[in-house]
Length: 384
Ligand SMILES: Cc1ncc(COP(=O)(O)O)c(C=O)c1O
Picture 1: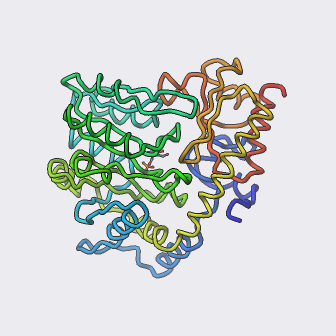
Picture 2: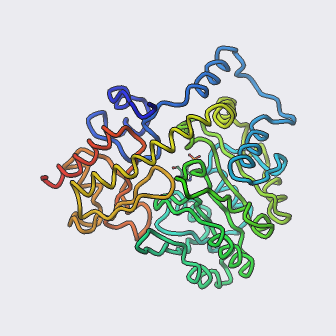
């Protein structure tokens, strides 16, 4: 039901996804979904607006959104979070940058797995830190963390942090308990802070399960700073609300010492929507993951039929497909050719690091009909 979309409304929806190229270009790029927001979230937002309660909010404890965050992490992922270890921030990338600046020093090296969500590069380099790539290793069933390479690059004395994207954008990898144990072992031996971006935590396909890095062991909790949000789960990235958390004896106080005035007061509507989503829209979330699961497999069928040269493995999480288009002969930037000749807008793999040459990222959080149109236009771009 929630994937039964009014495509005319979708094409004309305000916002960057459809607005950047206009309604005639099929938009399958930025990580916004074409779905409507869940009804309980919309109702909570409308109620708050209608009440006129858009002035300053309470500053004192308890802060409802922090308690809801703790409850959700406990119930969904078995992660015991204390509200007092959590700081509200505006968005995940702000949280990531705050963690970088608070926990590392200019000139130091920060590792992350590549290909990578593009702001990881700019957030690290923008603060005068050095990007240290740890490419994911491709194998028949997908990608995996290269622990030996991680250990080798972490040996450099100026390397002090590793950013993890759990689940991973753009490859959809979900780290399991063994991966996290190996990661934390390297972090412990090489004395790295682990900054874990878990914004896609709610979008994992069974039988895989999301395991918050900080929840994996006591050692993991001591090593980790987590940034996450409900904004991807409920399609409300424009509401800007996220969480920065650490229960570590070493990094927790560092996170708490970040001046709240520097972060700024957090918008009330993002908090209202987050509370409503994680308390009242969990059935919607189940329906969402079921529908996305269907789409990730439908995409495999459509590509096999229309663009069989494209290498695609359905991701274990997220609604983002990482497509290896190198056999299509479209050069390093197939997204440019798809846009020019097929009027379909995908993310260029080049933005995700050197491994992205010849790749595109496709957002399949849309109706099956639109997915059909997206892949048909990709085929059209090749004159098929
Ligand atoms: C891994 C990852 N981190 C962060 C973000 C952005 O989050 P925010 O808009 O809260 O900064 C995204 C958005 O797609 C993402 O995929």
